[in-house]
Length: 234
Ligand SMILES: C[S@@+](CC[C@H](N)C(=O)[O-])C[C@H]1O[C@@H](n2cnc3c(N)ncnc32)[C@H](O)[C@@H]1O
View (tube, rainbow, N blue to C red):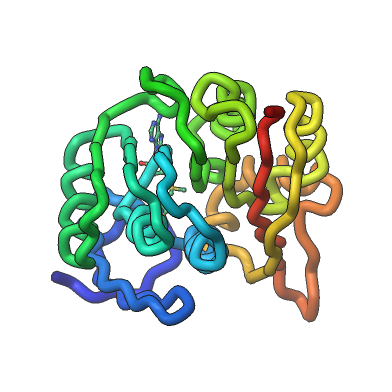
């Protein structure tokens, strides 16, 4: 498989990755057409590694190459439902889960984001599309995740996801609280813009109007990345 380190374009180029989350090392194959893990997903992986999912049924929307599912299984999840937009991406996730020795009970489902018909889960995990959401309303995947979590997650269960300051963190926290959830910022970090942000003039213009979307230090644009754990009312 081709080895490349490229941060431009559609982020769907093929690569092979060795990733460490805590003391767990993952070996991932990502073929062309599957989302390459970015700092957002890596941050979420690091945080999931510090959390306990013992004996839980966990739903991950948009699993991509499956990196978070591997961590969830290592952290005790008993049952996983992993969704994606198409079957080849799910096949890649299964390849990576098998390659990394996941033995939990895993179901793979092609589903359009929150359109999942199942008993409510203990926890819902996601790295929602935003910069490349393809939607005029860029927050579509974040807001629908929040609005539908009452159907997808059991009372007292959790919604855990990562987002950038570019997606307006105060707005997300307010929306979660308006929906009755208790919100905890589990971990935050920051990092330089992905090169492809600058290739999308509309995105850059939109971001300029979001308070606190980014900082410029020494001429470099930085976004903040946070993982939120929201608990549904019991
Ligand atoms: C930001 S990527 C995250 C992928 C992976 N979880 C990670 O962190 O590397 C978002 C994922 O959502 C998937 N996706 C996009 N639209 C979707 C939809 N309508 N339904 C389900 N998944 C979707 C994409 O294929 C992509 O893998």
